[in-house]
Image: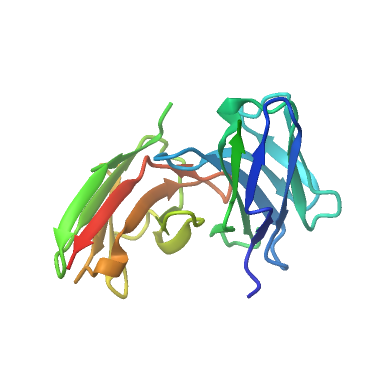
Length: 114
Length: 111
């Protein structure tokens, strides 16, 4: 299966700790997106990359959040000094900029901050 | 500001019924409207998508109806099955940028 993969699938951490999630997009896709989904809600956009360039960031993305895509392949999302309100499912999606808007999602990383 | 409004929040139908989920958008710059299906603990999976220059699109048992002047679109699921029980999200995007999602509809299909 060559779909979008995310690791870890689950993460439990204590408030104040830093966490990092990884996303591996579909190999030929040059766009990569991060979303956050809380229980019972639709996903909310956080940020996206085209190749290694971060093109847009949501106002939801506080200073404690940072994302990278250093070689235009996989991406990491780091949350520093986690808060209980950060508990959510973090979803990654990828797409091709060559006329294809369809975004394909990974299975997500479920974060629980105690 | 919620730019895509989805209704109903939940829906129960009998097997074989035709659930209909509606969405309305505000931003006329949106040019691509996908529907996603999500099972508990999984990521959203693309079902079907439409562009505003088309009034209807059908793929298998799933049909999107699109009304550009009313800025509304809807998903119909023909001959619904218990395996269709999931949460459905409409979404909208412009030029392949970020997706703006509706609030979701939790569908239950009773055997």
